[in-house]
Image (cartoon, rainbow, N blue to C red; front, top):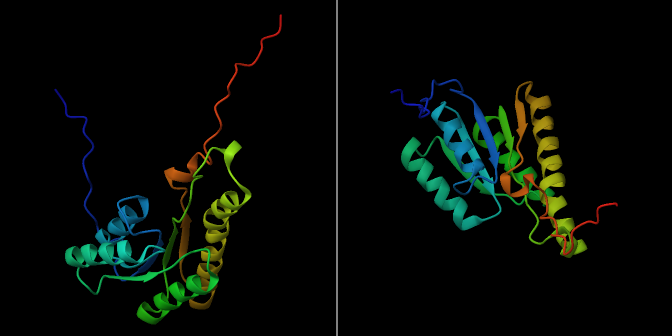
Length: 176
């Protein structure tokens, strides 16, 4: 009988000497897993997240595993242009700028779409859409200035389906 279980592939130093910036990386989700994999591939990683306490914990755990020179963090709420600029400025200060940027910040709806307020919807858009724009723009500027780099945007599962749809209270009528 064969084992169909997927085997984890260890890093191959594919990103040795490169610097990566990952947003929304203070946890066990896609951002944290991406930061870990980039470190496994030899990159220096700067993680950003709006949650200071969790970000500090994530940096500490990654530094314990990969060394304090391999990982750094900076609080960054992607809805704030000043914080986005500071994140990319930190990548420049620490390592001469980013080579890889992973836009991972995203926010799903906190209410069914039918019940969502304009303020709730604006928050979803500001984090997921405008935040990605702000970080991509900052990344492209850094890449242009340094002549290097690549960017990736993800849609976290919490926002992939968008706001939760309302459940119909009655079934649609069938003709005839």
